[in-house]
Amino acid sequence: MDNQNNTVDNAIRLVGESFAPGASLLMDGNILSGAAHLLVGMWSRAVLGPLGLGLVMANSYATSTTGKNLLQQFTKGGPKGELESEPAKSEPEPAKSDSIIIVETSHAPKDSKNSWDGK
Image 1 (cartoon, rainbow, N blue to C red):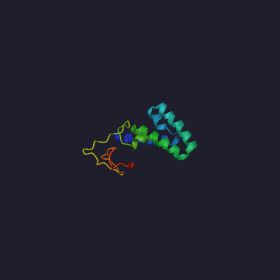
Image 2 (image 1 turned 120 degrees about the vertical axis):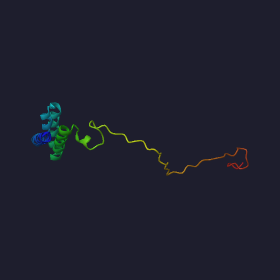
Image 3 (image 1 turned 90 degrees about the vertical axis):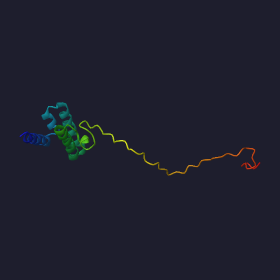
Image 4 (image 1 turned 30 degrees about the vertical axis):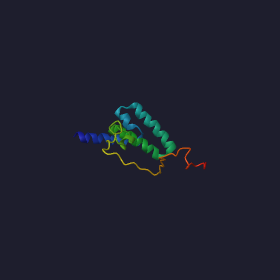
């Protein structure tokens, strides 16, 4: 029965979002966040059109139902969006080199007969 109540609550939130962005957050009691979504939603509709308004509505609904915003929904991480670090590799990758390194191994003394200045 709890699952049905959750589904009904989510449906009501979705209907609320169709009337005003941020409605689902306002229904949850998050007045500041809901009002911010309402203002940003109206601004984005004026500037970006229906796509901008839809993104703000989707962000509000996602935040209300899961506790994560849209960016956190699509990135790795926990409920707070903290990125998980990758495990350390057991073997280092071989060095890749696209350049040639020239190493001079010996120097002739200045008084040698094989000097470059021809003396």
